[in-house]
Length: 274
Image 1 (cartoon, helix red, strand yellow):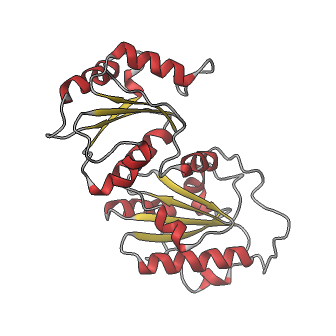
Image 2 (cartoon, one colour):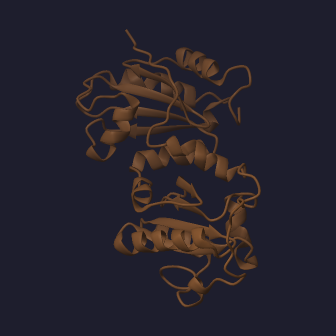
């Protein structure tokens, strides 16, 4: 018998909501009382250039980091104040010590960076702000006003988490198919998912991600989903935008049951973009 577990999904993506809120420009005017400006021109960038690898644009830095399989920590700022200087120091130190990350520092009103700023819809976001951008383009962390190196480290998520976040941030439904050569009922577990994905009404916005339950890189992520690494039967997790775990199903799936779960998860208001 299938086991269905419902609940809200916050996994390694308690930051999903934050990332989506940032992308939606929902943080107000981007300033707060108590800012202490040190002048309109930034002295800390005058001698260091725009990024850790030289004066390149945000979009170019993002492409370069992706090509190298690295994260880009993009710090957006407006005024040179104590918060901006502190955040710059944290980001710089973290990226200099990490082999997995690069940094770039972008003035929010720099005309040359308009396209990069608009890409993340940051015109009303709080400043300063750091976005952690995975090689696949997913925003895996958003830190307004302040951050520490542990928070930046936590934004270096597993490959599957990054895939899932990318889909969620594009408003897509995700099926995590957790199985390997040792799990039973693999084909039966995939059958309903594949039938759902073939439906012309909803299939075009559904992503299927295969996950090995014994992949050590995904152990924390799967644990947060409630899936044991020693699982001996294929399992399927359904996630709906903007970041809710609709179900975890053990064993076989059917299109009808998945569709019913999907409708319940969306509620009367529906799921964007459905």
